[in-house]
Image (cartoon, rainbow, N blue to C red; front, side, top):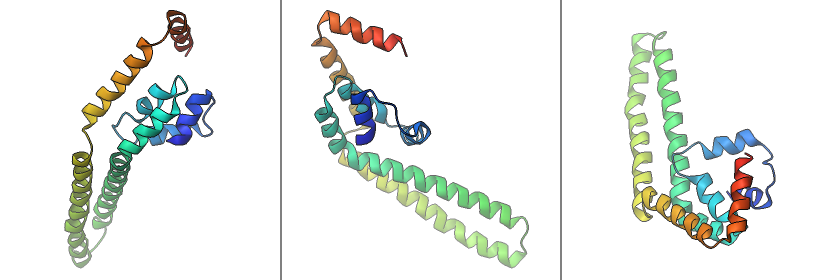
Length: 154
């Protein structure tokens, strides 16, 4: 996230855009907005503060997404393999399903704990919007027009 923030502040292209987009789109958290709003005017200290505040929630969300995808892949593999196995092997594969359910549930529980330890995603989005409005309100009209023009070029 710090690398993305630095690239935004420097107005430099990302080295591997697909990897960056994959990272940002892996969750429903507004990660890019959180990084872009305060960094847009070169204020990386605000971005660092946001990263510090939400790092546990963000890490838990990414871990939960990774675990849920892995469990889903394992379930699909068990389903495909069950179609070509005998009854004994199918029974053994069925023994794995409760373990997968437990892993999935544990990942959800860790994420829920992370949400309760930080403020909600809704409040996070509101805080980012507030910062964006505060930054824009303190800009001169000429700078605001320049930013609007720059954004229209994208």
